[in-house]
Image 1 (tube, one colour):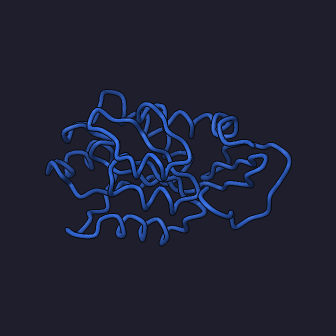
Image 2 (cartoon, one colour):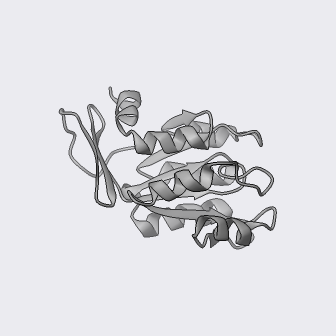
Length: 176
């Protein structure tokens, strides 16, 4: 929700999950139509290359509502295992200029339809680019640049996913 939104400002409130889309009208902000969730892997979904217990099930449920995309530099070399656990093939980044690669990926999907989730310095650009950027606090740490790029900051990945499961929480946080 950084900068001007590409759709009209609406005064009413609306939130819902409709076949493959999460729709929100946020007073003072505008309308969101979320079709894609792009999330970093290491530090955001996984710690030291390992998914926390229960995350695969939560992500599976989310896939009924939106298209899930993982994007990673595969820092720990365990992405193939994570892909198998989640039934998703992550987008692998090429070495060098990772922030631009992540932002370009969000743009190719249609940035105004994307929620981006991350916590590392190379996630800041995709959070800025997306219609909604969510920074998760992580045991790995959070880059200040990414914290400042986010629309919403949450304590962990489970809280980020709960926002998408219960979109009125997004409305309550962002309304002006």
